[in-house]
Image (cartoon, rainbow, N blue to C red; front, side, top):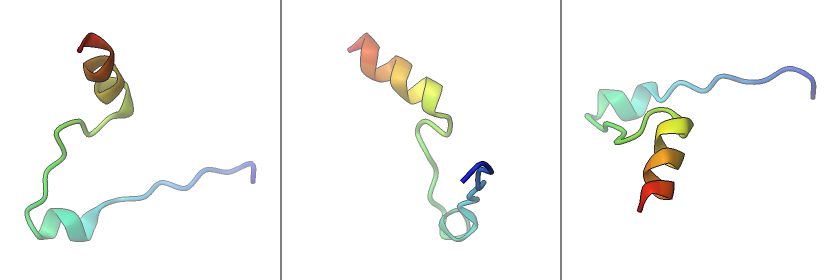
Length: 34
């Protein structure tokens, strides 16, 4: 409970998927600016 887990999207990247906002702070800024 006290430790976090870092999840890496290795399979998604292997398949060519790319994130528009790889970091949550950038995604939130984009949402709030609309």
